[in-house]
Length: 216
Image 1: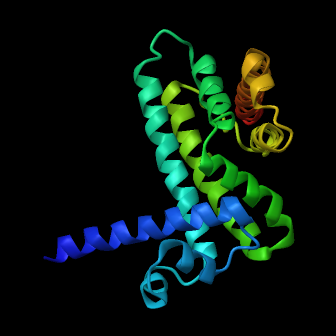
Image 2: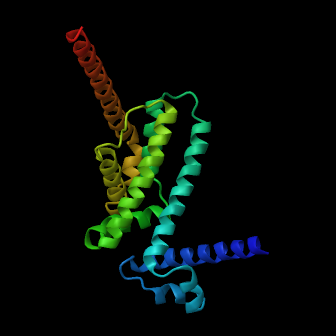
Image 3: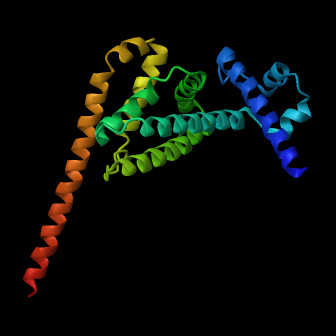
């Protein structure tokens, strides 16, 4: 009985999120109110507020839905990409993520545009960024990439730039036709980060040996 209620509750939350997503895409996140979502879904005010206190919570859950969906696609990709090296695999994952043509990607674009003007959205963005980069770093290590390739935010900013221009400048088709160049630039960066990590390890190792010899 309890499990059945939980399933019904999760179903209701999903229905509310889907209604919110339609409102966000029609009116923009900043212009969407709780009343808009209530009208869109046709549920009582108490029913909606029972699950969500505000539209920020709805947006957060929608972004998490996007992460879960992306992760399922990544797992499927990894199962079918055994012949590629680790750099090709990682660049494929990042580029396909940035060029995905989905409603949730359109919502993410709205978040990127609005976050500079709203402290709560900036906080949400930072939380999502940490979650996403942690997950992608785990995948990178599974592929054999030891360096933290997201350490300086370059890849995050690069991918966000591709996402924004794909949506706002309608550059998705152009990027898709020329994505090998995007992948090459990502691979070049990852290789360089790994090389710097190895050089730093060698330097530290030599320094340790030198210090040991000094005190013999």
